[in-house]
Image (tube, rainbow, N blue to C red):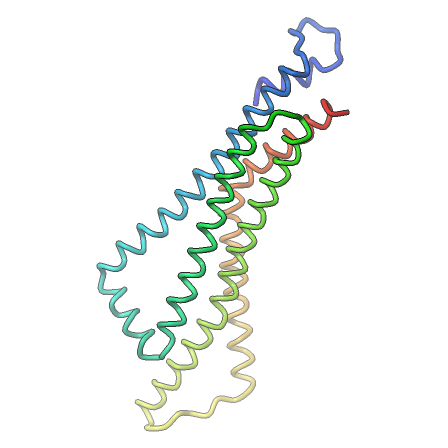
Length: 216
């Protein structure tokens, strides 16, 4: 934000830079904060749209048919559908929150209110990211563990006619492997969200710090 850098250089200094009043500084920060929150809303909508579009495209593929058949065979298709439905409902809830935050920031008429709304916007985005990461981990660990167990039992049943006994050590090692895979994938998703929203959150934080100077 080049204009803000110019203002910071000029703040309380007698140099050959144009002087700006607190009202002008507030207006610039207000406009920038509103733009940042609008982009947070837009990115979240694009993120949801991408997920829905991918789901629709996959529904016409052989992979989706086989995946649905597999989930039904092992008896967890309804649980999977319920989990995905709840996930989308919560994501839509956050998107609505982002839109409402954008409207609040856009119509704010005081420094203190704008600072409060910026803090709320940052907190909402952080909660959104945290929810997605936790939802992935919570959903992936039991789902993947159950799929492995059922798949192993079916393979054993087809090969020997009975379900093979699995030792506790194998269970522990398998669970640790799943935890490691989950940790790696969660970290990857965290980096993706950091790229998507991190820059915008930093801009909001910087705007908040500049507003504190005006409010002093």
